[in-house]
Length: 484
Image (cartoon, rainbow, N blue to C red; front, top):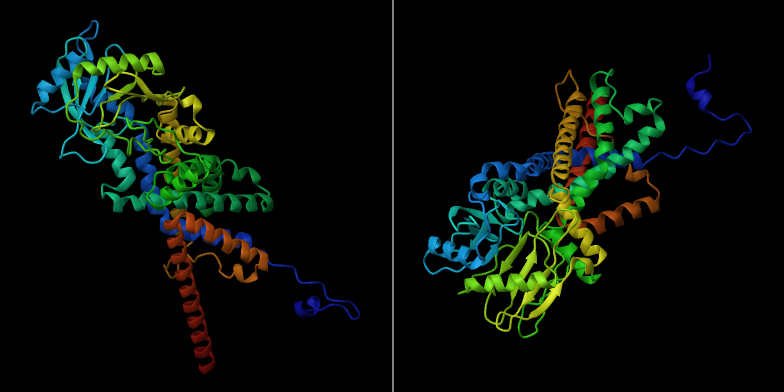
């Protein structure tokens, strides 16, 4: 029988077949997907679970704070001046409101909001007023433009920073940055397996009859492809309000003139800078700074003028001047579809419209940013949006668990060690253009998303050190065998 070596040799007089080039990109994706999922998985799991909980926090909040949010008296509402005077008397100390949100619908309460040294950024003391009787129905801490109350705020802050302040925000930025990379790497592996496997249906729907590792892999792959678009969406929108990457997004939008227009509030004609960094759950954009004395009667007047200009929704916030030389601002805060975020600035002395901004005049980038954030927060399409966000967050958390379960299944049973990572060395076999492309993309993404770049460099360093260690141990074993 001819041995294998003889079969591999070319026949006499025939040129040798050119070597088959080794595939390098799928192994690279496999190793990237493995390492990123292994080390960043816990962060993605936490942000996915807390995001799923936040999606349902708004309807739960309406039940928990029903007494504060629901008016007890039926009848025509009193003037805002009467309601604000009642709130001022309740608060005492000569404090003036920094914002007022009239009852948006019959049966709702009015919010009169105050600042104070005991409140954090974007927080305010909200006093709830029965519009028909001006009776006080309670007070709660309100957060940001969304008006989140304590329950939703607690979940939001855990989702955003683990209640660790700005340093804790790095965790959510890490998760948002890597979520998109892991999802794209998973897509590449899914396409590779789709081309190679005969049972393509197992990559679209779970193989329920399979067992062990194959069953887990089928669930992971099929579920992952269905949530891919949602994961990429959450990653992109989550980065927009992150600390490091979010600043780069804002700078890019400013450079491309994709910023969100804001009304001019300076009575001297100094226009404020447009913003490209919208807030999450009202992150930023909360109550204005303390305004000194604001005549309660003026609130009715500026609201009437705003309604004659461009404010035509019940969900409105009225802000008195934040200081000398500043205008009143009336803005719509309606976040459900169709979006209503028109705003108008009014001179409190002349009661003339100083400036106005209509959502219809927003650029397409500013509109997409507004819609993207509102969908991410579950406010764009109401309960349906919230249910989808809950299911998406739950699915991403499940994928993380399946990934760890697959890793555990692949561990060697005899030595009881950990499962090995996919083979290294893919870049060593890559063509020059492939190596240049990978390095260039990694560099650009790493600069734009600094936290991702730092951790990616850490992964590469660890991988290189592990490679040297493996080679050293291999040589040591070889020497030991020769000596033995």
